[in-house]
Length: 342
Image 1 (cartoon, rainbow, N blue to C red):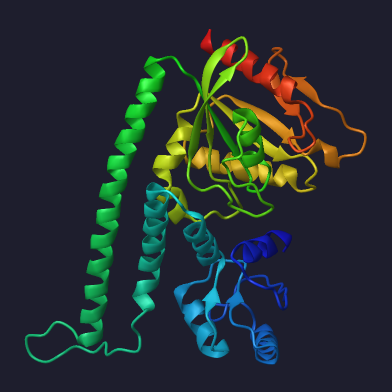
Image 2 (image 1 turned 90 degrees about the vertical axis):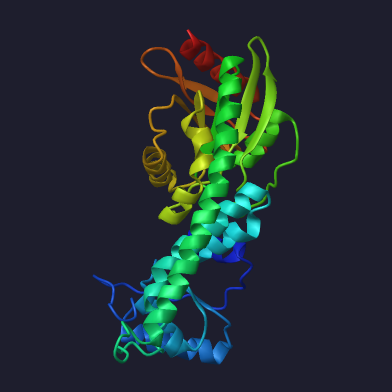
């Protein structure tokens, strides 16, 4: 609930009430039971709420039934995340990627979007009624828009691939920052590149557009540091597909810095979520260094490096905000890059 609350706040919502429902299986009509539907409907009317949000993905039929009952817009988890991405995207490529994800999500809703129109067959020589015709028109428009966006993104992906090849030829290694959203990636990125150009806030998905900066690593040379979008539970597949070009930076990196909130009691579960997304995009074989951030929030804890059985750095304990452990992090990065370079 705390994470879902963060999603709602990131979207700019003011939370009036929260309702928790426990079920063995979702209700096919409403997702929740009819008793909870009546409870939420009563709260919506008494509080004059503008929208109702669900922390799960709803089917098109469930969404339609709930909207009809509550007479309010319904936002499920996927729609909320898509709206946050649309709100945060700044670069041309980022906006294209979010629009592609939005349209692909909309196409799954279109099947049930025209039930108010006639579905009966027409007269002689007609294959379908006006409802079916309208549905086909909308499908065709969506297909055309999706195809156009994919073509534009393919061009940008080729440019990105050319840039990666140029960096490989120049033997400049790339380090990609990955991690669960709000773990401190952007703060660490700013620390590494000594800039404050990246938004840093206690919100989810503050970084959407990929940021690449050239940095000089002492006693090593030039490296490229890439900040990427934060991961989250049940990240919509439409977003993973749409952000394929951006996530290529992660897949093609020489080293991943997996940033983890050391003070988070659910950190182990969130590590699993990040590992699952890395596996989905084919980046699970890239060398990884775990960066346990926010140790200033732990009691009696000092910066250190943990090594694996072969003597290579496995994780580093630091605090970006507390300015603890930065030299140890640079040391660990250098050792891993030199090892994999040799």
